[in-house]
Image (cartoon, rainbow, N blue to C red; front, side, top):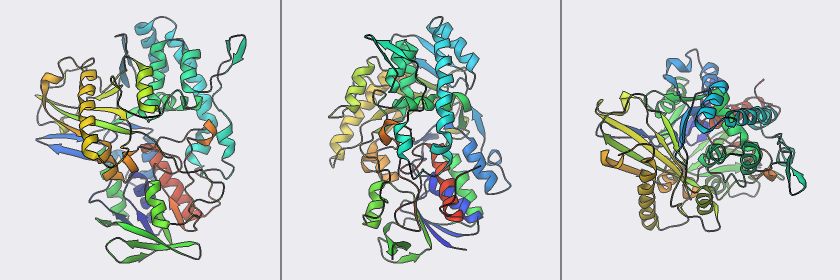
Length: 505
């Protein structure tokens, strides 16, 4: 039995902790804030409750597997999973709308043909077939196995089987997600539908590789789910599973340094004094924090994937409304920007700023646990924004509140009269994300993707220091709730089985 120190109580860190405890290790989690869950948090006020992080769960099989492997009580005995149907309603720039059924290719094809015109459904369906091929080629190396030592193979090969496209007497294949939309989907609304999946993860579709096609494919193939009571309930269930497996949590304790001796991690030291010895250290923190803990050039071994920097953040607007949720309302609506190119230029240009007309995701859960009574509704708006560039949080806050107003204006295209129903609102900014997760500027990590020269891969879970492992969204396989759970499984496997661990079979 080894002593294992886990830094941070995010979802990936807790997933690793539970698995390691079941394997017989003595696990202690040190969390600098006063609660668990990382970005998966909740705000409660006046009988309303809101998720302040992720609001939906893709690929719930990851957490089902966690609960199967860490005890007899399955996930569904701890939380109530609800499949969201329709998966999403889309409101496009030209005013057309479509509601896409959850995990039904035939239903999606029919819905698109009816709403956008004959042939659009077939083109989207054909795209999903190609996206599945990209998924099949990358699923194991990107999601189920530790990052390959020869990871440049993943960086160089584009797994998406793009359709040949003749342009100016030359035959080309799409290399970016935007080119897939323009050349293969051939409809601005379908292109906007495709690109919104990248934008939701903070990726510019004009530079994201064609392999980003796996993002909409995951949702299509495995469905999108909601946890009754909010996604915070999933965090609670994972935390309680850890406690049941005798994982010890120490909250309000900030790690200042990872102790290293003869090239191996041997424990942690705390900001307020004191230390704890450990045979293994698992760090679920952002790259800047991990580098600060070690202060060693050996943190990343020679030839490893470098940590990602410069990623955007999210702005979340929580709206407490008078008036109940109308029956038949879609749980999720994506209101697409009226000028997609201008939005991307603003977000990903040389001087990132706030788009004047942002793409906004509107979440309207049908969940009595989130409202004081049936005469009120809780709505969450989210949009991608630049991470905080520097120190002046007050100036940044003013700009973000102005952007929140623009988000409400955009959301009124999907919820007429929204502004008149608002009782109060709370704006959650990149500064809030930075405080809760420790990520510089409140940046949010994207899932790992193949191709693009390795730019969208994440550092391996193993580090250049023996006994030190990285877990969570800033390490392989990247950001997102499913990816965090997979990261925890990989780290546990590497600790228990050693470097020969090759992932789930």
